[in-house]
Length: 151
Image (tube, rainbow, N blue to C red; front, top):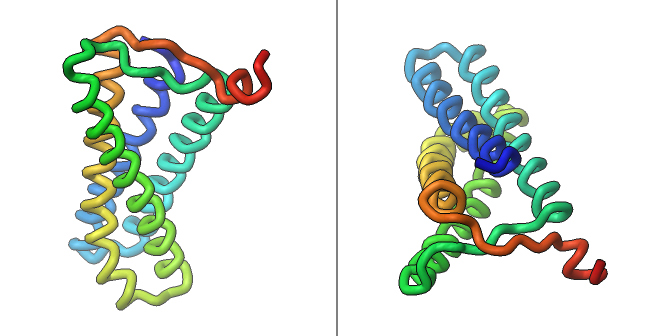
């Protein structure tokens, strides 16, 4: 298994686990533990994002290497995952911002929605990883720098 995709997938799963723990902590009214756990979840998600962007720019994205007859389903699933991840990231930033600004009533309303979106994002991200690197051999990989500058 390739190191960077595996490492980034570990961080996104870790972020979802931390969000789940944070959810349990706030339900038990353990506010400080909730805060620290959610910050750790955000840092884990940010670490995923840094690894993902670095890999995309320097190494590149790996195309689907599975059978051609399921490539269209993979592509549709990937587009769904990308949209979900983008929405989840935006919701995550808004939810964190509300918490840090102490706008707790709004934070309480949007937090559960954000968490569910993030759980779905993590699950679909793991499925994409499994399809690209575990179930099938990855296709070609071209770095963004190589594609843009031709070297």
